[in-house]
Length: 210
Image (tube, rainbow, N blue to C red):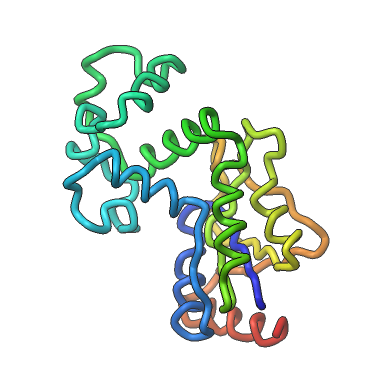
């Protein structure tokens, strides 16, 4: 079974590549953020479908995502304890899907175990009977093994692809936006042209790995 993990800064083209692999090469898409979104939907009942999946509005603040609408009080208490949220008034502030997912990921790793999401993804990969692409490998600075997500892909015999796009670099906005170190066996995909050029490179690379 083919297994590919995609790493790179936001807007580098990871989801474009993953969706192409699903549509044209028979892959199933699995993400470390899948369980985050699933749990956030439970914490915010009544949200529109696709709120956390819509790439266009991922960084747009939305009043419906204000913490005052969150039914998981443990999450809010944890944010206050870490001084991410310090005063009651901040509970009514609009939040973006990306911000919420980052904070929820930190919350669950701190309260359920640093490898909480890694174990979930590992189980789903091992249960799959079709090729798997894992989009959005992150560097978890607060974890005992910050590179464990990429390490899982390699451990299971997969390939880590680093997506490079000019003008889009890793940032320090959040610890999960730090660039992953590159392994000698990893591959680099240069996204320095149009979408067709990128996907042509993807097709050739997948064919070479088959």
